[in-house]
Amino acid sequence: MIPIEAGISIENSGLEIEELKSLERMGIISLQDEEYIRCKNCKDLIDIRDFNHDRIIKCPNCDNTVGKSSSVIKKTAIAKVKFKKIVSIVNSQICTTFGNENVSYDEFDRSWIILHDAKKYLIFVYGISTVSSFLSISENEGVILYLNEKKIRSQIHNLNKSRYRYIFDPVFSSPDHFKDYIDSLNFDKTQEYLKFKEKFEKFLLSMTDTKFEKDFIPKFIEGIIRNYSELSKLYTRLQQVENTILNTKYLKMGGSGLEDFHFVNLLNYLQDGLMPEKFGEAKRYNTSHFSYALFSVALTHAHFEDSLFFVTTNDIAPSVWDTVISQKREGHYKFVILDKDLMLMLIINLKLQYLIDLDR
Ligand SMILES: [Zn+2]
Image (cartoon, rainbow, N blue to C red; front, side, top):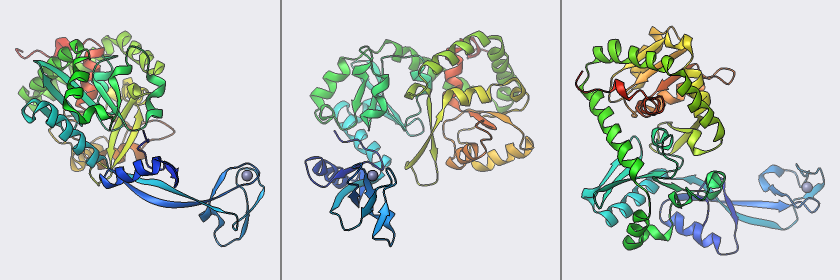
């Protein structure tokens, strides 16, 4: 199955090109034609645009002389992946199989909850879903749909391999097979997780801005400091899975809908954010949308010093993330935002559930 990723290119002969064209017809990708000359010495392909106006250039790989007159190899490349379209196709397959009333899609987490036989299941898309809090507690539950098999290969083992599926695996186009597949998965951790997530969300909604700022966040920070040994364990776990989805946070960037994502090394991000001096510069936002306007006011208050922000939503303006990324200095994040997902991740992993008590 063809990897769906910008930059992947396929020679214009063979069956794969048909697969690419069919993905293009579905509106999932856009394609562009490319032309290459093969270096006779090292067999590398040289993009014809590298010749500019010259008829002969040196191969960038081996320095051998290569002429433009050699036979041209035509390829087709994926120019752009349209995530929004992918989400809408996946959504319709899920709804067809389980019924609209049993499916909920969270547009900020970019994940689905399916109710099936009185049990709940989670479905994510590798590379776009906000999943850190769930992945940090579950090794082998929840379905992770991937677009490029190469990206997930290193993290697959016998216990978890059933949760990973190619996004357009034929199993999803047959409701019976899709249901059988879901039935074959574990779900205990998922129920526990969703129950606590719901409790946490209710807790945030029930709280006034003042209570969030003056009561909850100070206790949260105190809890992080007190349970530092649990935080170290979390860091160690993230380090062990450094180059995998488990240690990745996906930030939605730019203004064009679901098109562009930036991935962040979660371990580095958390370590930069949870430094004692940043606790002194913590800002709190109890809001359902964290806009750029709110963020820039916050930055002014912080005098643009290194700061940590607690935000009770996953709906964070792409321009805010743009700033977080562009203000990285010497490999370190100057501004760290702990959004709802990361707050939940810390509460669960640092055993701070006692903070979430609706009766207080
Ligand atoms: Zn060469």
